[in-house]
Amino acid sequence: MSRRVWGAIGALVLAVAVGCEPAKELPPEVPKGVEPPPPDPVPKESEPAAKAYAEKAVKALTAGKPELLAKANSSRVALKGTMVIDGDNPAARTITATWPDRVAVRNEVQVSADSKNLVRAWLVRGRFTMMQGDREVAEINRSELARALGADARAQHWMALGLPLTDPKAVVYDFQSVTGTAPRTGKPLPIHLMKLATGDPQQVFALTYDAATDLLVRVEYVVRENAVDRRKQWTVTEHKPGPDGLLLPAKIEVYQDGRPVEQWTYEKWEFPATVPDADFEPGK
Image (cartoon, rainbow, N blue to C red):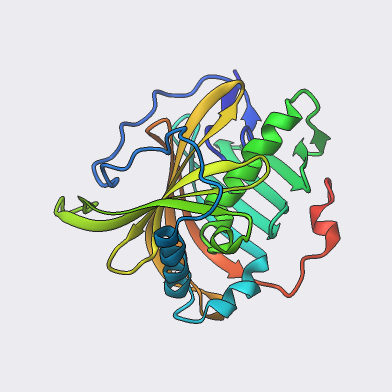
């Protein structure tokens, strides 16, 4: 039998066959009341209130030293967690990236007691490559997967580092201060919402920030995978101080179409001065 893993940082980063167990119900601790970004027109320029809040969010991430964000242009992170295949399957992931257009993802998932599945994906200046084990996967829609991995990289990696907020081509808009629901207590929780449009082609992300800390707690977006639009949600459940003075996610959960599909703990962040070109060469 074949199985499919949902919602990796790249669409179909694990393509190991068909036949998932029934998906889990959305747990009660997920924040309520934040909808995915609607397909409304994106303004030509950032709105002043949203732009001012984006600057405030960057200061919160960098402890008031926004110049530190430049150190995150080259990044590497190792994660361990679970992915939903036929239960919560143990998984390990490594992401290597150079902002804004190079990312390499390595996923290894325990698919049975004595079998692991290794899939690697690269997106280098718009060119997508995927390998399963030592074999390049050719029977894929490269343009669709390139767009999906580009969106996932922005939402699930670079957004955590605040880099899209500083992109001069990005448009931030629709800033709102509202009251949501605290994840575990159910009590009212002040939050800030705004939308960010970035990338080529342009992708819209709905961002949610904790009003008390101005830290990012959720990213929502829509990507097309296998000719189907998928709603994705990347939720931060814990932040911790990381390298170079940045306050970074420590634990996250990923949802697809309202269903939990991944849980990850960040084991190690690194911000090298540069990433060797060889790290972005497929097969290396």
